Length: 286
Image (cartoon, rainbow, N blue to C red):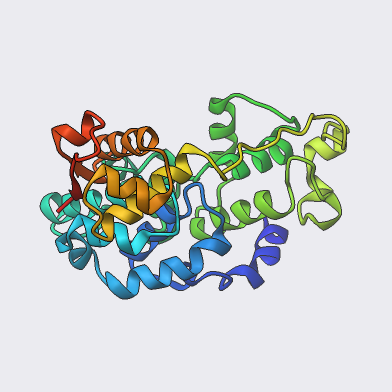
């Protein structure tokens, strides 16, 4: 444990949210970090908090303004869910972010990992925040395997958790899993190498053990089309025909994107737009 925390110490201030004590700022960071690399989040995090410096300011803002501030970060539904979570915290919790993981999980867009991360980092609750990177470290270092059941990982993580500083422990394991204990591990750089059960048993994967899976390309994807349509609509483009012209996307793809964005609560679309008619109108959610 001491070796892990000593390795983490220079990283304590690597990102702006690690110096934050405001639970709202930590909640914003954890939602932004879902499916997005930390290096990409830094600028967006600062800009978002400059525009919405408190939870109440965010809750009072129009949805379209929140989406515009989120633009460029991707997975825009996270912004809508964070906005709704802020409104519920104001409505149901007096504007204070809850410290209980179970209560946090009932908020829109907050799953088990995010709830645990906010509780541990913002409030010092002794709970492990287990994402894929943390799970990999726990499975290898504590169970001596490459794979284990979710229940086994949770038990091992709880037993290993540093109850005196759960924020540092969780963030140290996140960093270690992301930077060092990768699918093909860099054991020479790992502070846990000496006591790692999987390494001691020779159970770690080596190059060639696992076929490389190419990621789905973003260029030309429907996700890219959704983002283009949303940005154009937030800028004031009001019909499917104009959206198609503005984005360069075919009308049928624009119609499909508008329907998906409307289902996710990111745009409002009239019946003609949902039917795919060129004159169908859309508008930002208020």
